[in-house]
Image (cartoon, rainbow, N blue to C red; front, side):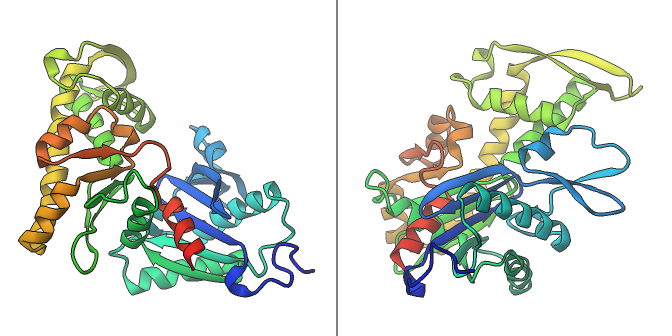
Length: 337
């Protein structure tokens, strides 16, 4: 049966689906509108391999049990488990299909962002998984090009000189000055900060906490108005296990003890970012720094703009929400043809 969205419409004007498949979130845009944004995980039965939950519902199941397994089949923006990734994306697109009241994806064009450093094999595996979804044609677009499109599409940021997109497990850095894009992938993301908090709690408080507990504590630290240890006054009771005995333990954590190590990690991130500077001409580097930096994914670091600005000595804009993210950039490129 023909898809009412594509009947009698030339292929270059057909509806588009844009996909950002990350380590922690899967986000889907249809016709320049974000329609799906949930956790990139699924829960399935170990023996039958039947999928029981996907997205946020799968993430909420903290203890799946022996008969079930929870998977995150996409890591660093590429497929780590082809079978699991196929099951996850098929479930996601079935849900989107139902919510958008479309009978099928037949004839619809798809756009998917992949890391700039993705290998040829990783791209082939991604395309193989995407072809199972029943969408007519897929185009893989490098994340640096997508981010550049997302930034230049909006008047308030189109003059920016460079971008740093802080993802879950990695960060993409893109310079927009010069004759062509210059980009680099840095192996530090938001999950790195969460791991740092877990390590600090283990070493200083001798308490092993879950990833979810460390995630919530990290977010609270990232949203602090003050970043100097002597100015961070909040305390929080945290429940975990004693490192030595594995018995349940509750400790009162001082935010001041955690901010310092996070600042060191943030400095390391932007030290790595500055390695890209050596690949630029003096003119392009100066131009980029004068025009300023946009940090996407930076809504999580909303109190850190001033600190980042000090590290780089240039104007910094933290992009809130999803205005300058990969789905936004993909939708802009799809509209531009």
